[in-house]
Structure formats: C-alpha cells, structure tokens
Image (cartoon, rainbow, N blue to C red; front, side):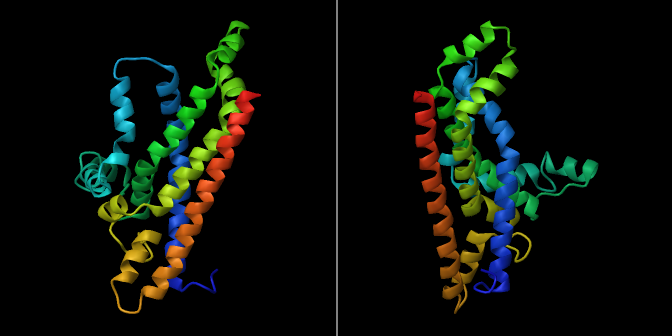
Length: 231
C-alpha cells in the first residue's frame, strides 16, 4: 500500500488509523459503564443522559467541533487549565482529533453495547448474585462474556466512524498535513486543487473498504451475539 500511495496520502491514512485506534480504546471503558447504566439502572436524569449520549448523532458535526474548541481550546474553560497545569494542548493537535473522533463515535459504541446488555436475561445475573457473587464479579463473569460480541461490534463501528470523521475534526484541529490531516480531510484537500482527483479517489476507495468491512463484521458479530444469548 505504501507503494500505491503518495507520502502525503500515506501520512493521512496512518494518522487516521492512529486517531481511530486511540479514540476507540479511550472510549471503550466509559461506553461500557454508560451502556450498562442506560440498560440496567433507572434513575432521575436517565432520559437526559440518553439524550446527551446521542446528541452528536443528530447535531451538525461542525457544531460539535465548535463546542470542543470553546471547551478544550487554549482559551477554553477546560483547555486553558489543561495547558497551564499539565501542558496538554488538544486544539490543532492530533490528540484533539482523537477527542473529536471519540465524541462522534461514542454514541454508536454505547448503542451497540446497550442493545447487547438489554438482550441478556437479568435473571442470569440475579441467579449469580443470589449465590453470593458481588455485582462487579457477576458483571465480569456472566454479563461480559455474553455481550462480548456486541462490545466488539460496537468497537468496530466506532473505529470506522472515527476513521471517517470530518466536520468536528476539521473544526477543532484544522487540516494540517502531517499533523492533523486525517483521511477525510485529505480527500477534501485534494479535491480543492487541480489534479488531485486521483489521490482523492484512492483515499475514497480505502474509506469505502474500511466502512464496508466494519458493517460486515458488525453484522456477523450481532448474529453471533443473538445465537449465543438464544442458546
């Protein structure tokens, strides 16, 4: 693939893989907790939490990126403290692209995991609890093995979404070649210059392959989850 792509195209692909990997990995623990809370707990503010989780799906990505810039930019109410206290700068850095991709992919991961948890019969967990097992141990030994295909499916969908994220990323971290230029940003940049159609087409082909592979894998894992729970 390195021989097929130009150095700039390869840099964009490599950065996109890096961003998507860390966005998925960083989101997974929180997604597991939030999905379990939405599926199993009933509390005041349940609908609000559900709405906040899914808000990035219905809100324009540019708005999400702008809100991230206001919050985590150098002068943002969180970003200025990260910069002063820890020397962490997210705006216009690849780490900011990770944050933007994670925010946009988070709802897909939570939804897949939540549906998996809701498909598990609560009586299985109650039976394990009645034998004296503490709740965290029940979740690790009973719930997690049953929902694992759904967790993996959610992670794959989140990874693909992070790979394809454009609006929030370009608003929050701009489009700097070699630093913040991800695959969608590179496609956009190539389409703005004469003669860039071939480069854009190659990157589009890669994006289509990743998206289709993610959908096929997610569907296969969902069917496996259904068979495991039914059995």
